Image (cartoon, rainbow, N blue to C red; front, side):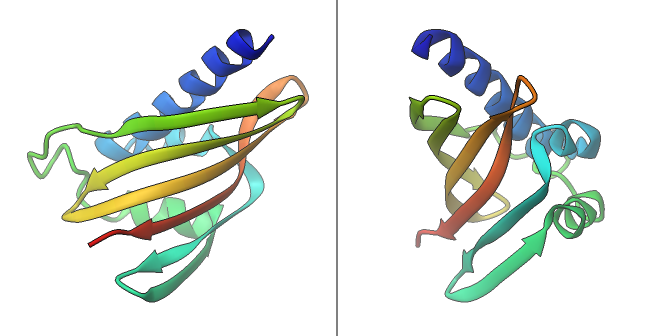
Length: 122
C-alpha cells in the first residue's frame, strides 16, 4: 500500500511542480484542498496565504518557464502513514532556493495538499 500511495503522491507533486513551473493555475489548484494554508518566509519576511491568494499570485507573475529557467524541482522524501503523508521538496525558482514541507491527506479517495510550510534557504 505504501508504494501505491507513494506513486499517487508523486503524481500530485508532479502536478504541483508543473503548475508552478509553467504557470498552469488550474493544474496547480488541483493539488490543494480548498482550506489549505501556505505559510513560510521569504528572506525572513513572514508569508501567510490562502489557496486563492496564492493562485492569484501565480496567475499574475511570469512563470519560471517564461523567464527561461531550467526545471530543477525535486522530491527529497515522502513518508506515508495511513491516510496522512508528508513530503519534503526542493523548489528552486525565480531566484529563490525554496524548500517545502507538504502535509497531504487522502480525502474522498484523493491525495491533496492540506498544508504547505516553506522557506528560502540562502
